Image (cartoon, helix red, strand yellow):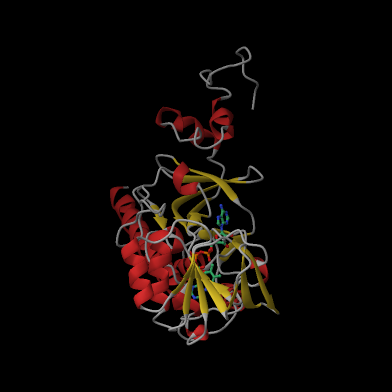
Length: 350
Ligand SMILES: Cc1cc2nc3c(=O)[nH]c(=O)nc-3n(C[C@H](O)[C@H](O)[C@H](O)COP(=O)(O)OP(=O)(O)OC[C@H]3O[C@@H](n4cnc5c(N)ncnc54)[C@H](O)[C@@H]3O)c2cc1C
């Protein structure tokens, strides 16, 4: 690219350095600006146009890839290998795969995709934008790729409580989803870690699996008086003091030590401490989010941005592997239908 003819501090009005200026700015400043799109277009004509780029190679992304590959679409998956459940010993609740490790599940998924023409790149996408005709994504090496439809399957990351020792037990005897790991802890003595309404709700839910529930609020907000009364009536023990550390052996939690010197004996912990989007790409693409920071989608997983689909935990539905995979498949079919319609219209008009 030739250098900018204007003096230092050029506000990107010369049209020579404009593309670099737009693309090098950091989100959220890097929103696509409509009047500049023709310049982005000029510089990307030599890029291969994929039918679909999928960002995220967890259950949602891989499931979409399978359907799209079988629909003879040329697709490219980007993945950084940080699936949400990667710290877990075993994945539950997925019919035919109940109890396999998340790593084994992904290995099988990737192996199945090798039968088809699916390109996978293990690199992070750190920017995505929509032009009039296509989506343009940029990886962290500043390499650009373009596609007709874009699927975000980037998942979430969990806020793990900041307690000494927790990482020795996370995914083994410290969990957050009773539907995933509650069965293995049935009738056991279980600590629920949670504050306010969330701590109350998870305690009541946990009583479905065991009558031996202890709520710890770790010095944070207590449930309301009426909620505390309800929990006491259901024989839930309640500790509001700060937690000092966790103790156990070989991944099995045995004790929760409170800062006041008290120790709670237990067989496991379930926590509720919120989560965050794994990626900010939905923000840079101007997707609509709900109050829980989940991306809003319609009944076929299309976001508020036309042609941009979101599947799995990043979208606003229940968060289980089988649902993520189902949403990936749903988005894939919807995308393929759209591409067929667009191609048909173009050919009829040519
Ligand atoms: C400890 C734990 C245990 C769980 N156990 C179960 C269980 O037993 N059963 C069950 O059904 N569910 C379980 N879940 C929930 C399950 O993990 C999620 O529902 C599921 O992983 C969602 O799949 P996904 O494809 O949407 O996202 P993920 O599996 O999180 O995959 C997203 C992928 O996108 C990649 N990525 C993100 N941003 C980018 C980017 N910018 N560029 C490139 N790649 C990117 C990530 O690295 C990751 O590989 C568990 C969750 C946790 C935390």
